[in-house]
Structure formats: C-alpha cells, structure tokens
Amino acid sequence: MTPLTSLDELTPGQVFEFGTLCFTEADIIAFASLYDPQRFHLDAVAAKESMFGELIASGLHTLSASFGRIMGSGVFGTISEGGNRIDTCWPAPLRPNETIAIRTEVLETKPSRSGRPLGVAILRHTATRVADGVVVMEATGTHFLRR
Amino acid sequence: MTPLTSLDELTPGQVFEFGTLCFTEADIIAFASLYDPQRFHLDAVAAKESMFGELIASGLHTLSASFGRIMGSGVFGTISEGGNRIDTCWPAPLRPNETIAIRTEVLETKPSRSGRPLGVAILRHTATRVADGVVVMEATGTHFLRR
Image (cartoon, rainbow over all chains, first blue to last red; front, side, top):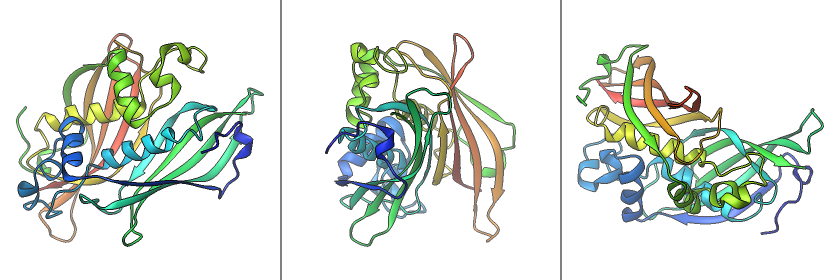
C-alpha cells in the first residue's frame, strides 16, 4: 500500500482495508502459551467447561496480529512516531479458522499546537468476522504522526 | 501463587505482585517483527531518527508479556471466564534491558445481578520501571470471574 507522507493526508471517516487474518487452533494455543495462558485459550477439551464452551483466541492475539498486519502494510510506517494509548474491546469471541477482516478508520486528526511537525490521529482498528459481519475486536488508538 | 476460588475473595485496593520482566534488544525486535513492525521497534540505527531517539519496546509487547506473567501465575486461572475490554496507556517508553515490575490492583468488583455464579472485576495491571519507579504501562481490564 502507498505510504502516507503526512498526517494532513488523513481525514475523518477515511478507511483503510488490510485484508484478512485467520488463526488455526495451533496459532491460538501458541500465542496464548506465551501471552495469555488461560484454559479456554490453551486446551479445546478444558474450554468446553468454560463460559465460551469451546477454544477461543486470546483478545491480545487478535489485537497484536491485527496491529502487525496494519503496521506491516507500510501505510503509516514513514510518518509514525508511535502512540501512547489503545482502548480495546472484544464484543464477541473469535474461534479457530474464522476469517476476520482488518480495517482502520480515521476518527480524528489534531495537528500539534506547539508548531512541531507532528500531530495526533485517533484511529479505530477493527477485526470483523467475514462470515457474519460480527465485530470481534475494536481498538481505538492515539497515534503520533508526522506532518 | 495461591489460586483464587471466588470473585468474592477480591477487595478494592488489594494488590498482587507478579515479579519482574526484562526485554533484551533481541526480544523487542522479535515481538515487533510479528506484531508491531515499526522502525523504532525493529532497528536500533533507524530508531535514532525517531522521536524516541533509540530502540524501544512495542507497547503491545509490554502488555502481552505482562498479561502472560499475570495469567501464568495461576492466581486467576481457576475462576477466570475471560474479559471483554482493556484500556491501555504507555506513559513512558521502555528500552532494552530495563527491568519492569508487574502488579495488579483490584479497582472494583461487581457480582452479577442476574444471580449467575459470576461477576466482574475491574483490575488495573501496571508495569513499573524498577530503576526509577516510572510507570511504563497501565492497563485497566474488565474481567469475568466465577463466585
């Protein structure tokens, strides 16, 4: 994808599509083993006794893999100076082999008032299950971008 | 650590300490390659040109590794039924070889009103740089726990 060259190229409502992701059971277990070792992320049999009734992906897995896809696209890479906040919710569980579409919507841009060649973009990153259109993750991030 | 057996064992203000973590430059680059491929997380030379002036850990790395430590402790494992929200901020950058202490504070507990043997705990997870006491991550999560 074409890299952005300035925060000023972003406008509220603008949407970027980053294709799809799909985690196998092995992917889910591998991530959870390191970063979220809970029984319903690690073991399909034990997960049957949980509230979910089956193995589901760690929400941090969905967040991290989505972010990897977004940053890996190169769109923000040239102008990104990081961020300091992400508020994330997971409205529905994500099961193995369910395909999710990753997209980012621009909510707001705020050029720096200090005159520095920098500003803030509030970006909403979502993962949506392709089969039924259910949003499984919504992460609203505060990003510092050059102008 | 002793596993909790009910949400009702938690009280606001209660604190759990989960020891320390420390990322090497290689750890930081390995996580970022998968989940947050930005130049200031991947390349110490390129990072010099960034706002941070040096290589820093992805905030998602700090979040995921802290969560892995917390869930890996077994304290919440028996009663955890997952969660649906984490609001995370990173007030300061984390550099390679800086040791951080991981702790969780109970902010609030809310038993289910529906009579189900379940409730919500709002937990604040923090990572604090041991050398100077600076908080580098604060993540407030909504956790579903059995009673």
